Image 1: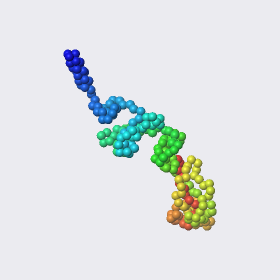
Image 2 (image 1 turned 135 degrees about the vertical axis):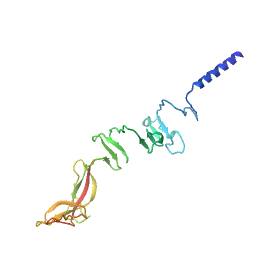
Image 3 (image 1 turned 120 degrees about the horizontal axis):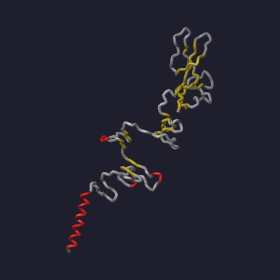
Amino acid sequence: MKKNIVLFLSISLFTLCLYAQGTEDITITTYYPSPHGMYSQLVTNTLGIGDNDGSGGITGADAPDPTNVSQQGDLWVSGSVGIKTGVTGPQRALHVVGTDGMRLAPSARPSSPAAGDIVVDSSDSNTLKWWNGTKWAAAGGGGACYIAYFPYTHSQKTANSGTIVPGSSCHAGFTDEGSIGEYGACWCNDPYETEYGIFLPPGGKCDDGTAYGWRDSPIYLGQGHLCCKQ
């Protein structure tokens, strides 16, 4: 009987010692592992945070599948992500605060892009580009656009009735962003009625008040196209 009492007391004291040594508050809500607590390190193959599939509850479908090679190492977050946003939290889906900037490493452009994709194009001098739903467009590029004059196949066509000369294109390295409207020609009222290569959008004025002056012309000879370097 004494041995049983001593054994019981020993087990009780050992249990109390373990309880006293514990420094973390862990609560098992359903099954292990599902703890609430503070940890200095947590390692996992995949991780899901929140109701990612919109089912109204937390299920295995809300996290990447660890058996799926393409999803291993993935993180799915149903809410916003904040980096150094403090107690105020993120104000956007991704909110980064810091004094050392943010880096997007150069890479190849995705083979199947979707509108909004952003990449630092390693195949084009690490140019920052985004997919606008139709093509890759370059960011910035101030001064990298110009207006090209594409003539009609027949001169002296009236507005909206001309056909652009086949093969008209922007300079090499520039992309045709489309027509910005028909352009008219100004003629100089000199004795020879010389046509000068001065073009302006319809409704503009040619008269510059010189002795001969420019004659506003109703003749449209082509279209202006915006050419930009991509």
